Image (cartoon, rainbow, N blue to C red; front, side, top):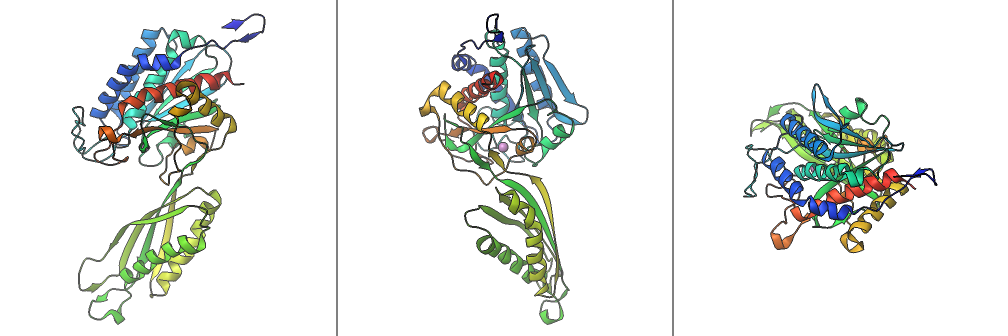
Length: 412
Ligand code: NI
């Protein structure tokens, strides 16, 4: 509302918590729909169409005539811009929408109808929570009190560690002042919200090591150069790098998850390939790892008469909630909604999230919504075939998103 005397738009009190409660059934119903119809990364075209229809229905029911929905010709996912018509900042609210190649074993009545594909990371809940937030923000009683613009992004291919890159390259962040996102998390108790600042999720970089030696008869190892032995030494040397070369106060995970070599039990193997992933919170470490690891890998292999090449694929940096303003707005929003007792702290995670690619360009905040509930048997972590979220927490995720948006757009 415009205050003639102060020459400014005035914040009006609004009960976002009550609105989220009112929308509870809607949020759960949409969550179940998306849960039942999961699609893999880069294949979320039906999901995108359903989200588009949901947003259009929300706009129609709340009298929003100018919701600007943008889809992409060669890429799933969409953005929607809600322009309040009043001057102000622009906030991007993000949900990821892809599922995983996992056969669901939850036994839920709304389990996946798509064999071998499952929303095992809770991205179904992210879609539903963001739709719930959109519903609250579009509600006339809330919308009229907002200023600036809210942009929603329903993003493809988070699981393949870089789906967000496409949208950034296609200008989704143009004119955006800040970005906000949430993740449903299997070890955080429901229905609590986590609005911690600082290190949240680690950087993700993947690597391949190709080791070349010399084939020989398995009974005459001295005539060959055994890449299985050399690769084993490389794996051990990499773990020693973590424990001896890295500052123990600086978390670093170096996991070799694939070890492929040989096809005969009695032949000295001439080629072995390793693949793995590197996680850390330090950009400085991230930048010098390639050189350090290359030297360890090639020198270790050389000690066994083999050659080795390391190639690192940089995926995304760490998520570090470092904006004082956004950290404060997020904590105040959560407290305003559910009190201090509605908030839980959670240790930083060594898993990664490509939300950090947005945060590389604009200030951002990334929070978590609890999914764990022992009394309800919800004890499995994300990516488990039995992972499922506590639906009682979802309205809280929607409320936090909407409250954060309202408060951010008002600014100081
Ligand atoms: Ni996820």
